[in-house]
Length: 211
Ligand SMILES: Cc1cc2nc3c(=O)[nH]c(=O)nc-3n(C[C@H](O)[C@H](O)[C@H](O)COP(=O)(O)O)c2cc1C
Image 1 (cartoon, rainbow, N blue to C red):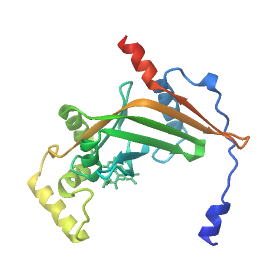
Image 2 (cartoon, rainbow, N blue to C red; image 1 turned 135 degrees about the vertical axis):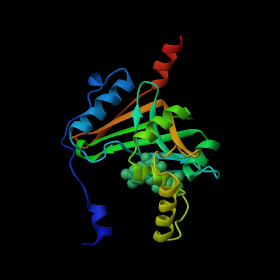
Image 3 (cartoon, rainbow, N blue to C red; image 1 turned 30 degrees about the vertical axis):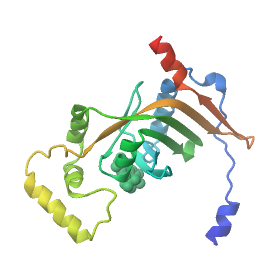
């Protein structure tokens, strides 16, 4: 199989359903909860994986996958190293685009919004729930930098292990962000072959709340 040929020919028909605008909640945050619940209940692998796009210092987009670790009517949270490329990009331009793709459900959710740091206590509370290996990893690895060798990484991990024999504290450069959505788009594959994207502006709802 020639993958160049295969990608040009790959085609599926969307069979799962269609997007009925009338069935979409008027509250885009409630809609997100509904679709996330459906993705979780469908047993998808990592339904909380989302593509996060940021803006580089050259004004170019940069995207990578991160895991959604919390959401409510304020926004969507993820955790990372504040000194990573994405951290530096968000410090300079605190706006992001998010995209979830749930292939088995033939659904995509896209979100745009401003980004803020989570309060330190919130990051510390989440950090405390991480497995010890991940906590030590946050001390040992400098994200976005090329690791010299596996051996160097293992040495750094061993050093962190020796430094923190008991509780592992939150590294000063590690924590969470909250994306504050101003716009959501809900996309559902459609058996007619057309795809319908229904955009709902969260801004409207926020405006009402502030009136
Ligand atoms: C499924 C998956 C989940 C990931 N989750 C996270 C995450 O929650 N936080 C994070 O910092 N990086 C996560 N990563 C790694 C990032 O995609 C990325 O490689 C790393 O954060 C460095 O990105 P940057 O150099 O753009 O800052 C994940 C990668 C994958 C494939």
